[in-house]
Length: 236
Image (cartoon, rainbow, N blue to C red; front, side):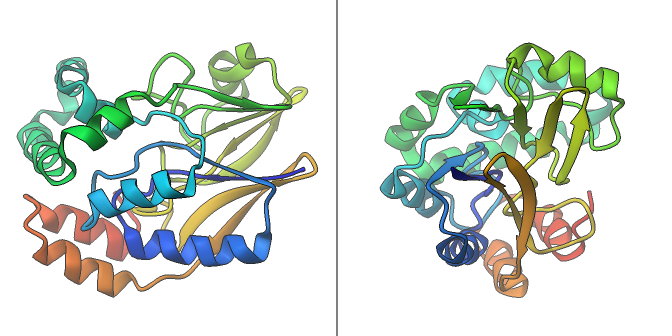
């Protein structure tokens, strides 16, 4: 079986369309999405509609959860004092995204599960019990085992950190799918994960980053300069 996992699209329709073109070449049997669909790009409503039309099963991401349950963002900010200087900007950006996508799409996002299991593969956004916190790409084997060992599947996949990798931890493979938009590993290309007969590999594809930068800058999103810098640099 060939399975693709596409995560963290963040409202970037141009990157999503590039991934869709690459998926036509990869020809997976099934495609899952890893959450974080609308927030953080120029086309939040269009991205949600595209994923719904495609019919991909998927999971709830943290920026999806902050739209469906605004108190989730408030609780995360209270528990993460280091983000205090950015907290108001984060709230304002989430409010803008919610206005763009409307109540019906927000309700659809709220119905997404926190986990998808397909044969020997388990997919979550960050952790099984938490969409907001996950190990980083440099986490120890012990951290990864603590986070994903309980999934009891040969392959555990998550998104969230925007840094793709594949690692073997004991008898399990832990993989991060990377992100379609807002990569944070210095590579501006869109990323997704392809699992071919049990072997996960990262795929990257180019898209028109400058076009997305222009559209983000002109879409009316508060603090759009934050997003455009990340798009151009692929760094936090």
